[in-house]
Length: 308
Image 1 (cartoon, rainbow, N blue to C red):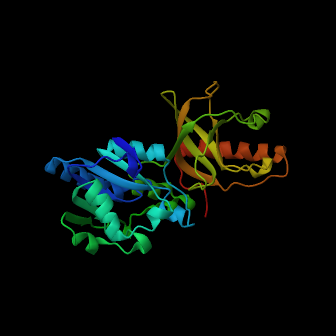
Image 2: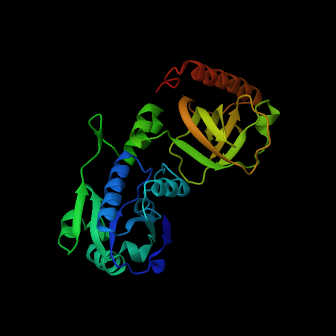
Image 3: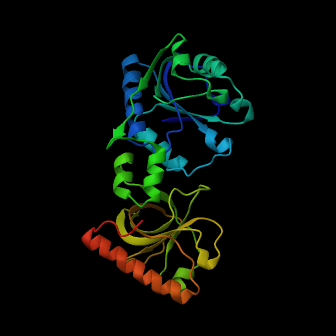
């Protein structure tokens, strides 16, 4: 998939099929839209183009929320679904003031030469969100909207997935995503405080201002072609006055130097919320309990450990 950063880098198309949205998490609802788009593009012998925004409109207007996937993860998921091009538009003040009609004329028609546009059933766009499906229908290209994807009588949405993550419901999260929820990243050097109390950890920075979940979890970790079980803390580490969100994982039956390696952490079950302890001794005792709970989970797959 070709990534095009900014309208200034977009060459005029001879024709395209287009969908527009944030596609955070690339969940099963998004997958339905993309599968339909790719099939239509193949039938029309035109490139499929997904248009998204950075930052998101919600973040730009001061309503930032946790993202379900990093940009790198989202890009990989979109690539796997067969999208030809990903146009990433810089959502800045001038663009936020662009009317819905101007967006259609300047971006969809003049730049992308759209022949077919597929959107979700709740899609709105343009300044003050005045553009919608009916406006798109007024122009000279084919427009279609996908019906809502429903799971257990509820609409599949990124908001619903954020809620299920906050509640520690990974079964529901994974069903809505169509895969297990995970966070990937490069292992960095930490402060070695876990090692000092007998629980050395691999540390992965979270490159997002708001994490979709916080707490202590039983996890699988894919590392150098192997899968390890472990327990992790995802949060600011209040006991050591941490200021940034960090993912710290204690791997069971592992002893190696893996700084600089990439790891994929798959969240299996929530054990507890993150909390501040009065001493490292108290923290050490709690970690022992967390490790025991996580190992019991992997032995019995008993769900849930976390009571909410």
